[in-house]
Image (cartoon, rainbow, N blue to C red; front, side):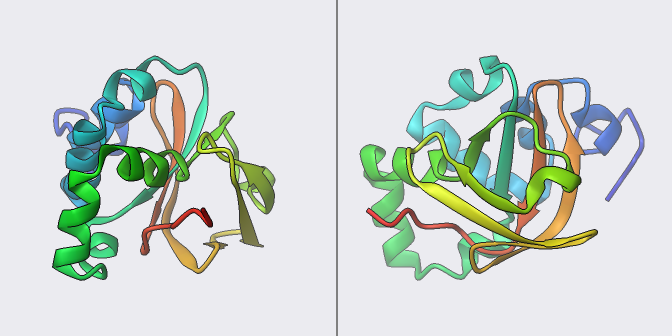
Length: 148
């Protein structure tokens, strides 16, 4: 991943802007950004004080059958529920990541592992502890689904 400040998807550039804006500059997160826009969550995420976001990479969305994904993207209520299930209040450092955390959706998500090897439910963290102005982002390889 690029580290050059002039590249909007670089870690240095992402650290300067709020989370939804930061994600929009990162090509690995373009499907997530589209979903966040469809759900109308850009302002909510950008104005929140401190968040931890488990951000599914494009490859995570590719695992969902195209018809199912299209249906979810068209259902704002379900889409909002799924997306807010990926967000936890507070900026969690890797040392605080393992454990059960209540999500903005209202359900809880369980993180296991340590060091640089973490799982969020069944999803693996492929890139972690990415800082934005108001959030810590952990890029994951699967989309998390709330129980309800």
